[in-house]
Image 1 (cartoon, rainbow, N blue to C red):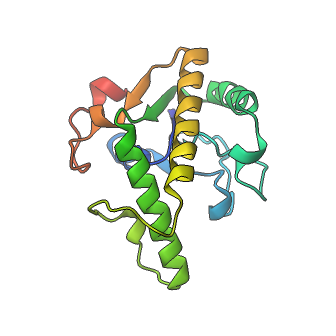
Image 2: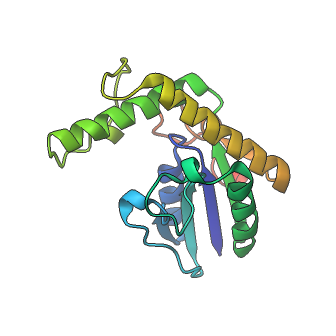
Length: 184
């Protein structure tokens, strides 16, 4: 079985991929086209869960893909790529304000980690949100809204329903409300 998760950032996609992998005994590939992680790629092996962020496409290594690929190119790529999978999950959030705050905090934490040359991962730790100075909130919001539009467009063009973070996780983000019936 091959499962593809295409997600907007900060939607619980890494956690979902990990849990599906454990639950179904599948190998998990997290963001195989992420330029910051070295673009390892994914060779379409069976028995795998592959989690991708909607703007990350293979073969583009110098700039974030959302800056150089049109919405049509991105949607067309995913429409073709998802044909290689038994199940595709489109993942997003309903409460955009919390998603933008999470992204804003994540980016600021990642910048802080780099500045401190620190191996501690502040970016995925539980936090109480406060506006950060290391990242531009307006640009972060614009990026999240752009990614969410891509998920909605992909859903519309493929007729794959969007699964929402708030339907999978309790408000603390650590426990599932539902599992098999909603996802599989």
